[in-house]
Length: 224
Image (cartoon, rainbow, N blue to C red; front, side, top):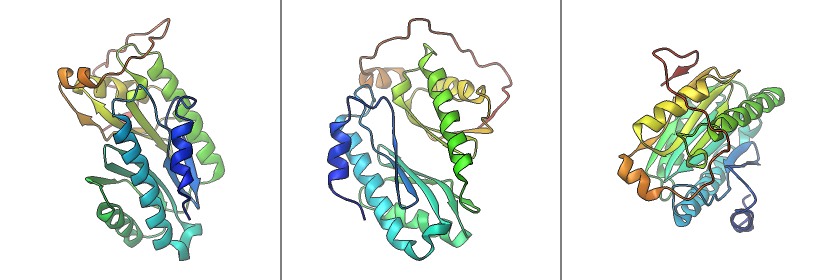
């Protein structure tokens, strides 16, 4: 189901794609872009791509008889796999998590699958628009390195992945929660000290007119 050249193609378009681009394979979506300013090494990004494609293949095989009832997005950051989307039963949710956790090179699985019918095309289009707006706000926030944060949007819920400081994580969640249409923000970050993050920080251009985001005591969106 998965062609080996998919991974090679992803590497070739690295300089063109500014963020994680979704690839839909039989109803299972995975991210495949390599980003120069990502805080992961190129090798780690390729490892994550391999994991995404491998888990996609394994889930596609496991759910081939009910594929029309399954919509799973697979995202990996430094071998931590996030599963989002919809499955028909709680058993299918548990099965998907088990398959991902047993997959080669996976260190952790965050299973955020919902037991529900697959989201509609209009819902997914709306999620894409929300994700684009959130990404735009990240770019215009000077405290954030936008390409260091991977975001996934499902049914208005924004999931944030990446290697960040505690402060960056709080700011990113606050900024995302302020975007129209965002119902909830879920942080799936790995955290490091400012020194650890600085060692990983790539060289990236700063926006010409950055804004400062200071989280207030309460925010419109729900973050966890």
